[in-house]
Image (cartoon, rainbow, N blue to C red; front, side, top):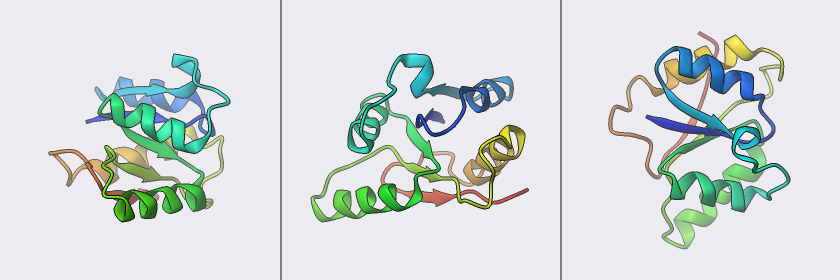
Length: 116
């Protein structure tokens, strides 16, 4: 599974995910800061990566738009506000746990992470 962290999450989380063998990158690492949400999702989709974001409301709207327009995305992983932004390990663990059932990827799906 390949993931791309939105700029609202620390690249340290991508580093932790890579330590667990996941193909992970972040907006900061690829120079995609200051892109709007739609552009971030499009970038992730082009790379076949599920986007991980704490921007829950806007990305739920984008998921609805994708359904309405029959547009595909590579998956959206939502980090709820119950996680503080500096809880890097807890967020990484939540991502890893949430992805376990999805061996074929998250294409077109929206998943919330939870504390493990």
